[in-house]
Image (cartoon, rainbow, N blue to C red):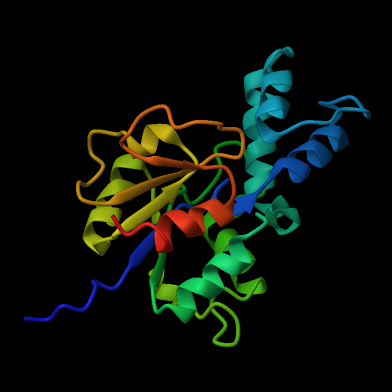
Length: 213
């Protein structure tokens, strides 16, 4: 009987999990005169502020279309992601990026392909480079809906899945038998026992590699 541990297959969400948009949203919001020059805040605070304005929901959707498309080059990788992906490689864990992302933004007049923009962002940061993280490009999956995303997670056979949205991890369609990890810099304590809450990527690494329950 083979007693070797099962090779980890780690699924990771893309937007707001690997990649952070706070600064891009603030900068783009100010450029469009949707935010005061002195505004400081997170993506969520940008959204809340803009939605209070006349036609705020449309303005917010337009801003999202820009940031996730043409503006994505200004987004940054969260602190700790580099070390995490390198550890995955050292320990021969397979990494899969599974994102709920449509091809085009609803209010983007430039019609930038959001999936291609995400792939180019990853490529520019060494995700697919053998000298960096060495993630096969075919290990990146996009689903047009949350349901489609969760079916991809099941098809891959992930042992772990990391997401920034609690509603994804508790969705009734989430496949069973997967260690669920919520990446949430604002969270202070886990709200329930169906997933572990990690405020930093160092905590994510501990949940993946140092706790094999």
